[in-house]
Structure formats: structure tokens, C-alpha cells
Length: 423
Image (cartoon, rainbow, N blue to C red):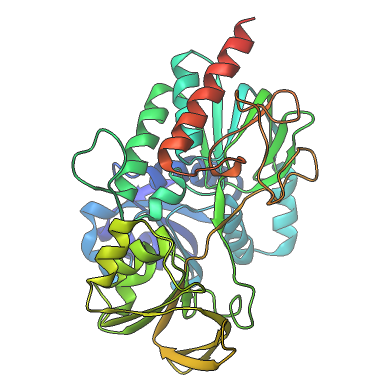
């Protein structure tokens, strides 16, 4: 693997045959997560493909000419031409491998795969999930000098990474951008000593034997497991929703509101998230129509008052979506009034859906007890129905789900684990 500058780009990349190029930056957690994967793959594929790294901040002109606007970004070349996918952000090993395999003959791919040596790692505690609950558990464990690993299929931060502003987390007088609060938490836990294995593929979870497999080659064993995989946006499950996800329908205002500058947006939902995110979207959109199934909003009073006072926001109460369609650049939402049965079609440039969350528990396979909604039940020490397995944060069955309650869960689980391991 070689580091180059824009002066060397033509010779090393354009004339370099098959090349994988990593544009990285300093003080960049996603870059740090990518670095060991990129180096490991360069050792495996290096005889067939050239691996180069370019410091984006000092080669900005080159980066901008290639439409590389963030770090890390990995692009692939073959005989001077861009090929494959442009990978950015939390880049997974599997996505790198897919693009590398496409550059070489399948017989060589098989040969390289045969060189991969399985890796086995041992930890005292394995934390599965890197939101506030998992990060807090990792912080307390490393301060107790317990060898812990934190595994996440994304980068650390969880839902707060895509939350616009957080104004109710103790210790901050001014509202904090969600991504910054996530960064502070993540860096504190990492610097403390918890081992991060993030932006990985989790191929197998065996709770009975306290074992997981990441990136298909590393098996991680632990004495205890803390589950902190959180929750994901709930779908409405109406026609057109899944087909148009990411193509007119979004579940993240922080991610996508900027694409609807001076446009008409439809928001589905009436709870805190829907109303607070609608307010954020109004910084960009020309008009917002909120569809809510009840005759009153469920959001807190402060959020309601702000929304009602916003001249850009309109409300359609007692109404539910019945389907989504897209024609050209326009989105169409078929609706039904739940009291009168009257149907209607609303038109906008985009749709945001905020109708609650569901626990990320698809990996459980019936190993743990859950409540009627699929959330994991625990005792007051956060222990699940399976000895040595704990659950914290939004994945856990509880009355209130906030950042502060997630942090509390992580604290309790880590203390309980520490005391058990001291026995």
C-alpha cells in the first residue's frame, strides 16, 4: 500500500492498471474504522490490485475534480477508468471485497479467499451496538479495566447521529447537534480503551455460547454479552412505501431535509419526533403538510406550540396514508379519513415518515424472552432471560425511551457485569 499526492495520481492511478484509492482525512472516525480493513485487504489482494491512499485535505483540488466531497471515500480504477461503486462514510469490508473481486478473474478470487486465515478473539464482555447505551456500557467497563469490545454494523452513535438538535441532555446549556454528541460519547469510550469493531457485517450471533462472527472471518468469544442494538423506524406497510424508500420517502430529516429546499413536503406522524423533525424540515421546505391519524398531536406541548405557530406547517388530522406513488419528481399520498372514510390524494415533492420505532431483534431466534411488542425483557440489573446476556437502551422493554434512559441502562448493566466478574 502506498500513499500518494495529486502530482502522482496520473502515474500511479490513471496509468496504474487496477487500483483501489482511499481518500482519507485526519480526525475522522470513519477513516480510522476503514484503515485496518483497507490495509488487511491490500495484503490479500496486493498482487493483483494496487492500493493507494490520498490525504484529502492536502489534495482537495484532485478530490473535488473527482466529486470526492467526504472522508473516507474509496474509488476503484481499471486501466484509467472509474469502475464499481464509490464507497463513503462507514465503509464495510464486504462492500470493499465486492468491488475488489469484480476487478479480477474469479479463479484469482477463489485463490485469495483460500488465503484468508480465520481469526479468533477473546474478550471479557462483548457489546453489540454502539448507541448511547452501548457506548456508556463500554465506558464503565473500560474504566473498571474489563476487556471489552464494541461491535456495530454502523459507526458508533446510534439514532442520535441523525438527530438534528438535542436540548435535553444534561451538561450542555446550548442544544447540541446530534452527530456531535454522538462523537463526544464515542471518542470518550474509545480513548478509555474499549476496542471498536464498527462498520462491520455481523454474520452470526450465538447468544447461548456468547459468540459472534464478524466480516465472515473473525470469531469473537466473550464471557458476557450486552445487547444494545436499539430500534429502527417503523414502517407503515402500505403500498409503495418500501419501493419508494430512499426515492421520495425518507425516515431521517437530518439526512435528507436539505434536498427539499423551497419544496412541498408531507410528514406522516404526530409524536415528538414527527413534530420536532417537521420544524427542522421547515428550515428548508416551502410548505409542510402533517398527516396524523388522531384529532390531536401526541407531541409535547412545547413542540406543538412551535409547530402551530410555524406558518409553513399545515395539519390534516384523523387521516392515515393508504398508499404512495411517484410520477416524475412528484410524490402522491393516497389518504383516508379514519372517521368519515373519505379518500383523498395529497401531492408533494417528498415524504418523511415518523410513526414510531421497532426493536432490532431479528437476530434473537427465540433465545430471549420479549414483551408483546418484541422488546427484550430484563430484570433491574438489565439481565435477560439467558444467563450472562444483558439488554440495554431502546431494545429493552421499558416505559420511556430517551438518551438519558439509554445511558442509565448502559451504566447499570456495566456495573452489574463488573461486580459479577469480580466474584
